[in-house]
Amino acid sequence: MTQLDRMDIALLKAVQNNNRLTSDELAVIVHLSPTACQRRLKRLRSAGVIEADVSIISPKGVGRHITMIVMVSLERERADIVDRFKTAIQNTREVMMGYYVTGEADFILVVTARDMENYEQFTRRFFYENKDIKGFKTTVVMDRIKASFAIPVDA
Image (cartoon, rainbow, N blue to C red; front, side):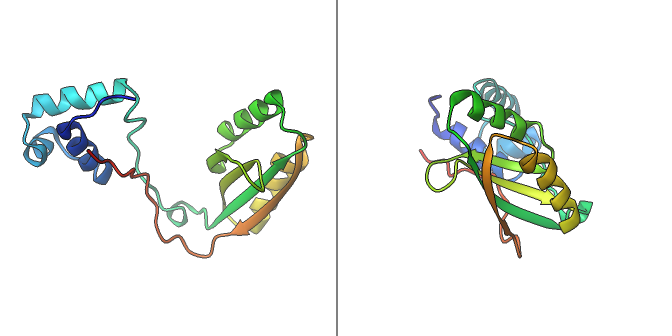
């Protein structure tokens, strides 16, 4: 874990809220020079504290009207099978998020589709053609209440 001081924390809070802030705007918020802000952000990115700078896109705005939460169970929980499925998740564009979990299922996925027909095609390709999948349960999202990657950052 990277040691964070109060200036790092202030920067992280600011860029989580708006990653389009200029160096000058960040400098005013965290009371550092623009150059010091850029240097710290570069260090935080290099250390992996900041994983990516992204925009949150409205699924409906790009024609992806349906979001599903899918619980996936594997036939067996063997390292090679888990690793293969993790790779499949990473390489599948319809999977927005994937979590390897404990409990009732082995994985929880957040999946997007244009419509139910598109989701059915996805399930045939991604689940039914995969011999390592024991089963899956789909919950259709009725309304997205919050979309955020913000992590609580405290001193």
